[in-house]
Image (cartoon, rainbow, N blue to C red):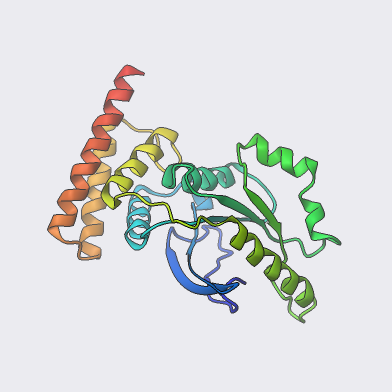
Length: 246
């Protein structure tokens, strides 16, 4: 919808999509954007992803980013526990609530007036999950088998692009990559968003195993591996102190 053609991968399988990310370039109102499409958390794991997939996905994503200007959170209009987990992961954990986040509500083909979906009742649901978007766009994201939604799609496309232009940071937010990654590991452990509850020792072992496997898969340099492990160790020590004090 944003790029102007179908490029993003989708899945309706029982296990959902894996934690991958792909980038696409788009021109929106004369401004160049690089859009990263992420699958979020695997619904097949009740709003969580396996340790190795979380490590690999987060590291790959961060390695691609020089900064973040806007988070675009897509949902089909039903807020569940894993919907909130996705929101927290990207808004709070990854970006530290330093980046504007907008909500895009899809699957509204049967609505007479799309914007009517964002009513008091649905606003309360979002609020109850501590999801506070800086803007909301209610859209139809498909043209339909016989183009029956083509006009609604065109209007939705225009509306979403305008919201993105209004909402994005003019100066992208970023952090030093290894420190950023260790911060994310600490946050996902504390919030239990991605990692199952385990002892600090078990967590360290699994994290290091996943990291070593990933380093081999992507041919990560020894320098990058050691730098990342050093920051992970700092994060792990911090978690250990908090666990003891708690």
